[in-house]
Length: 144
Ligand SMILES: [Zn+2]
Ligand SMILES: [Zn+2]
Image 1 (cartoon, rainbow, N blue to C red):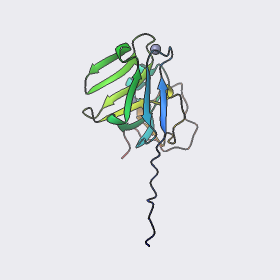
Image 2 (cartoon, rainbow, N blue to C red):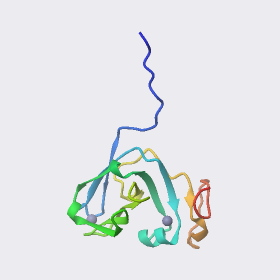
Image 3 (tube, rainbow, N blue to C red):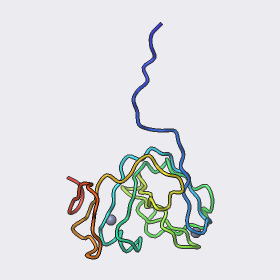
Image 4 (tube, helix red, strand yellow):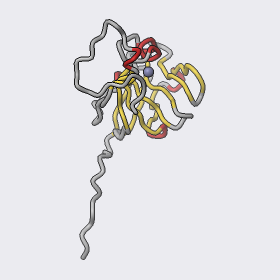
């Protein structure tokens, strides 16, 4: 009898819940993010009203809106947008890369993902009043 080889994949079968501040919109996303970063670009700072946006990327089909589909506000195009709750304005995720991926705004996750941001990007446009105090790699724009 042959031994069964179990591949050492990091993908988990966990499903994470996410929600807006008021709870009108809820989503589920599999805990299989491919990358995560803190983006300091002026667009992300304005969109979040914060020093940077912590986001995690995953294939679009791995995220499902489970509640409040008629309460979402899609800012932008079908295949390139920021998706928010229309009732409370919370930033939930962005549809990116010609609609193939979503970038989940990590602050909207209710459950803790396995991944954490691994780098700071667009540090060249970082807010002057914010100091990065961790040891993650920093890139002026995108990582090389
Ligand atoms: Zn809401
Ligand atoms: Zn950005």
